[in-house]
Image 1: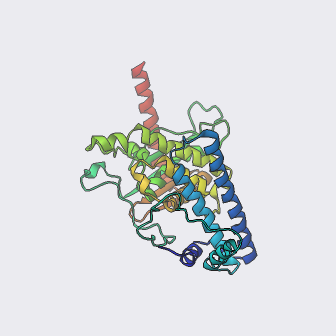
Image 2: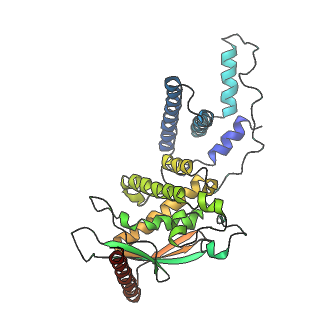
Length: 345
């Protein structure tokens, strides 16, 4: 069982303001405490208003109260006060004013964790490997790949931004992509995000489909993990995060991602294999993805190297020769599509 002082010490290990101005750090802790109390009030409001329809209420309350406790501990540390001292002084004050009853706690026995997990560091650990030994090599995500992305104007130019085509090993990865928006925003380069998910999380049903790496050897895995629903979830998360990023300078210079975004990503994927990934891993995938996306958007093209074992993405501009080869792949893809359309007609 953990006592207050032990918790306070563990909580302090996660304070992200400890090297900054103490007054600013204390203000952040107090404002955070107020915000989390408001979140708990909102949870209670929903219970009173809606009744017991929220099946995850217990988990939400545990999270809300835990956040409150963390900010209390953090504020106490900045104020140079021990939580054990606070707890004892508080009980002493209450005992001097109110009678004590002997009733049991509302819920007993309390569930207790077997052990306190070791504090994680900024390292996200070894690569995730969701392709088990039983998966044929041809159906596994490649541990290293290079994808070239470049834009070319359409033959029937109507003033819209040029479409882009991702190419891997000289083969198109899907169809040419546009922004699909009234205002140009660079979403046509969003396959970069799928590459980031594959690289950092070891997960991307979208890239499995584009690279023809679906795990058909297992019908259940192929249907659940690599099927249409998982693809829709990934595409939906990419669009959601992109919209949120647009209100945050596309995470340029950002050291972190808002916790609500990370929690939604985990919640939407909780029943998939990627549900094993932490918020820290999602944050790395999102920030790395937008770092590469900004580079490709600004330059108009890019060669993206994905190292799934090292969980790293790097990007550089295409060389003149690579751009020429990409243009030929583009032309062949457009010609093939037109031929197919004519045959279908």
